Each structure stands twice: as structure tokens, then as C-alpha cells.
Length: 47
Image (cartoon, rainbow, N blue to C red):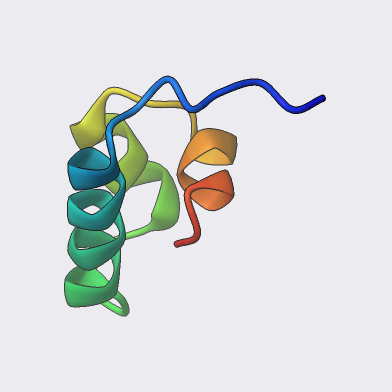
């Protein structure tokens, strides 16, 4: 069984929106660092 999300739905949607808004100007790693999450986590959130 999958683990429940550690992050709220609001955080997940905000993280994805931030990544999409910065696409082409900032790296995936930079956005993840701003959010204080691992880049793999950001990817798992759906970015």
C-alpha cells in the first residue's frame, strides 16, 4: 500500500504551479531547493 502524502494538496498544487511558471528560466533543482524538497519529490508531486 502506498504511503499517504506528506504534503498537503495545496502545497502540491502550489509547487506544480511554481515549477510551470518558472519553466525555461530556472532549473528543476533550483525550484525544489526553493521549496526545501528533494528534486525527486518535486517530480513525484507531478511537476
